[in-house]
Amino acid sequence: LLKLGTAGFLRVMKCFYYVHVGFWWALGAVGMLMASISCIFQGDAKSLAAYSSVSHMSFLLLSLIFLWCGSKTSGFVMMLSHGYISTLMFYMVGEYFHVSGSRLVYYMNGFFCSSLLLGILFSVIFLANSG
Image 1 (cartoon, one colour):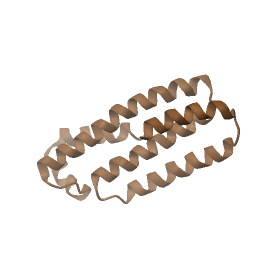
Image 2: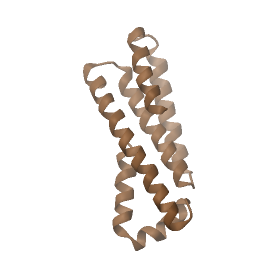
Image 3: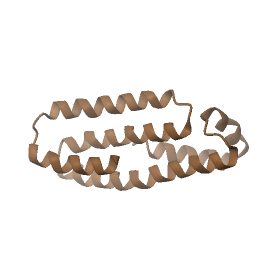
Image 4: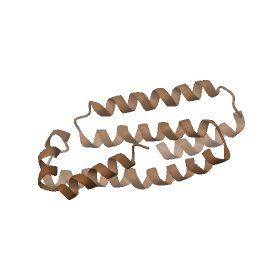
């Protein structure tokens, strides 16, 4: 839904042409900030993935507001990459749940200490979603 909403926002913004840009900029910035802050306090890995996804799409909203030629192209690339990265994030959290029986971030520390490769993979995937 986030990606479809962003594509719809891009179509609607073509009609407005810089009308209320300050409002949309503030909405994107506040959404990104609130989602990022809520990511800090998440204990559930699936909720963490969802809120980081919202933060990533708010960053995309900020880039699409300006409607430059480069922002449209980069927005399209970000939508594609977000589709792949967010799917991979939820897949990895689901696989972790099947292995450990828990989605709590607190228990991931011990699991990642025993499997360094998996810890690095999780870190790269979550950092790729940060923007």
